[in-house]
Structure formats: structure tokens, C-alpha cells
Amino acid sequence: MSLDFVAIDFETANASRASACAVGVAVVEDGVVTAQDGWLIRPPGRAGGFDRRNIAIHGITAADCAAHGVSWADSERRLGRFTAGRVAVAHNAPFDRSVWAAANAEAGIATPTAPFCCTLDLARRAFPTLGRPLPDYKLHTVAAALDLPPFHHHDARDDAVTAALIVLELARRAHRDAMEELWPAGPKPPVGPLGAAAAERTVAQGSRTGILCGTASPARSPKSPGTAVRHSGQRPSEVRR
Image (cartoon, rainbow, N blue to C red; front, side, top):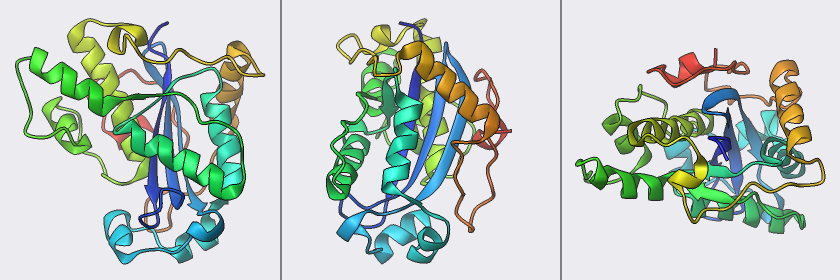
């Protein structure tokens, strides 16, 4: 297995894990970010109340999601296309996986989530071996310690791209070029109904045509589909151009 994965980041409307209100994804194929996306979500079912504390963190409001959000059912289908045949990664993966699972449960969707690896766990294991234990392993702390460019924290798309770059930079510094070398006990890529090769074509087509693209929050700059880049110190905003 090479460095092939999909980085995912969710934002929520309130304390409920089912209240997904935004998601960002960054697709990595053979160590290269080949596609990225992000969209607002209308939280499913009864999970849709927006808490002012959450709004203060990410700036997304109920009005934003009502005007520009995608339903959870459509969001889950998009995520399924991105992750078909791939492992997902996230910074604090138990949170992001639980958001996906809880939103599915709230919406009555029985589809399982993608298998996840955790970049928070990876960073906690990697930095002591690099001789640089950190005071904490939050996303922005790890990104700064790796000399990654500044990004808009809690913008789901920027967070997903940054999580992807963390994996690539830690792999580079540790001279690792496969997922199983970074997560020896981690999950293996699933082969769903499409098969891995067909899943790769689906993601590639989506990144070219924009069929998987959603709408960014009106409070943020519009984000266009990304092209293939290899990490070399680009800002997340530069990665997506």
C-alpha cells in the first residue's frame, strides 16, 4: 500500500455528534494531493440547532446552511465516492468518524463509515522519535512544528488539507512511503462494490468536472477544485489552486 488516503474534517452545529454542518476532504494518491473539496451541510433530523459556542469557533450559521448546505444524504453519498477503496485519515479521527456515524444514524442511513487512521495518534508517536515532543498535539500546533504554512483553522477544507500535509511531511521525515509503515496496525483499504480502480476513476472524474463540489460558506472565499500537488511548503490556499 502506498500513501493513498482521503483526509476528512467535520465541523458541527452543536454538541451533538450528529450535527454535521460542514465537511472538507483532501484526496492523496501516491503521496500527492490530487483533489480536494468542501461544502456546507444541513444537519440531519433533530440535530440542526446551532449553538453560539460552535458558531464562534467556525463561523457557520443556520442561515448559511439553509441557503447553501447540502443534505446529509447527499453529503454521505459524496463522502462514499471520495473514500471508496481508500482509508480515511483525520486529526482526532474518533471524533470525525463518530460525526459521520451519528449523522448516518440520525438520517436513518445504514451505510458504514470509511475506516479511519488518526493523525493525532501519528503525531504523538512521531514527534518524540524526532526529538521534539510538543506541549500539545492540536492540529495547528503540529502544523506549526512541521513548518507547514498557516491555514484557516476550523475551515473544514483547510483543516482536511492540513491533516493530509501532516501525514505527508511526517512520512517524508521518517522516510516512510506507505500507510502500513505509518500505521502498522491500521485498517486496510476497503474494496467496495465499485472496486478500488473504479473508485479512483470516480474521484478523478469528480475533481476534473466539479460534480462532487459543494458551496463554501458565504463568509469565506469560494474554493475551486484542486489540482495535483506534492507538498513543498504550499499554503492550503495555494494547494487548492
